[in-house]
Every structure is written in C-alpha cells, then in structure tokens.
Length: 149
Image (cartoon, rainbow, N blue to C red):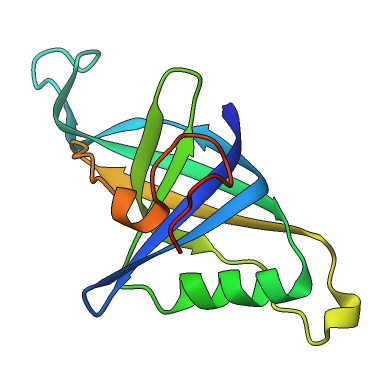
C-alpha cells in the first residue's frame, strides 16, 4: 500500500466542476488488477484463462479537519454526480475516478467531533484519461499556492 500526503477531491455536479483541497491528510493507495472473464482451461484446469483486465483500486483517506471543514467535505462528497481524487507523488500527479465506499461517520454535535476523519473509496477503470483541472485549482505545484477557489 502506497501512502501520500495531501489530496484534492474534484466533484462534477450539474455540469459544474468544483474542488476541495485537504492539505492535512494522508492517502493510502492500493492498486489491484482484476479480470471480467476468468475461467479454467477445459483440458488443463491448472491453467486459468483471463480476459478483459480492469483496475479496482482501493483508496483510503484520512484527514485532520476542523468541524466546519468536516461539514464542507461531507457536503462536497454527498452531492456529487462524479468524483475524482488527485494527489502528488514524487514523480507525477495521480488522478483517479472515485466511487464512495465508506463516508466518515456523521457526528451529532460538533463537541463530540474528533479531528481525524477516515473514509474510503474504490476506483474502477480500464484505462485512465488525465483531465486537466487547472481552471479549478489554479497553477503551480506547491500546496496552498494559487489555488483558484
């Protein structure tokens, strides 16, 4: 499992693209390749025939948030038609489509809120097409510099 600091969540709702930056957070990314067709060979059952590979990656996120940031993040995740996550590695920026697996637990009162929030996603895709979200986040690669929302 790979671990990265900080991430950006992009949502698309009603044709409007919006972003949410979590600077104090950790992403744990675990890639996995699966196959749509997987069956044994009729003549030799030890041989498994696999076709149509796809990726089903697991993405666990942990963020340290204030209560108001927590409310904004849950709202951001809840009303999205499409979600993407973006995070930086040493070499490049990774970007994946998201399906919500587990949202953070909703607290009844902000007094009982704990700073650390955990949530998990699945990312299912055959091939990745990079989407340039610079018009949302601005320009530059440093956290907090020129983010455009």
